[in-house]
Amino acid sequence: MIKNIFLISAIVLFLLSGCSTSNGPEYEGSAKNQIQTVETGVVTRSGEVTIADSGSGKSIGTMIGSILGTVIGQHNGGSYLSTIGGNIAGSLAGGVIGSEIARSGGSELTVDLDDGREVIIVVDRTDIVAGDMIEIIKNGNNVEKVNILEQNFID
Image (cartoon, helix red, strand yellow):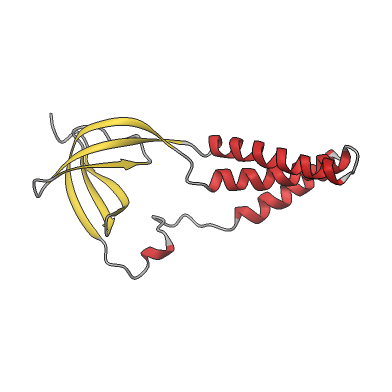
């Protein structure tokens, strides 16, 4: 039984892992052939935030929990009710666990842009602090990437 659980989990993780390369910045597929704009400014305030799961952790957790719940439900009696009950319990537990695992740390930045505007953005990095000069790469109103141009610009 445990062997089956590990086998099914390994197959699911293998299918979800995919192939990736790390030859530079990663962009969403929708960024291809799009004009992006760059704005620069100085960070005046930086505060830590928690970024909630965008849905991927919950989805993956639900899928794995559902599979494990089905296997456990079939093992504990094999009836349709125990299988369905195991599937539902596994889905719910996996969704909650996956959502918690997928939470990440980030920063809320207040930025004085060079054109005089003040904006607030949330980024999934914590190494940007007040005083840093940054560039914000945007696609429309969506922030694609934030780069540090000069650290601690304000003394």
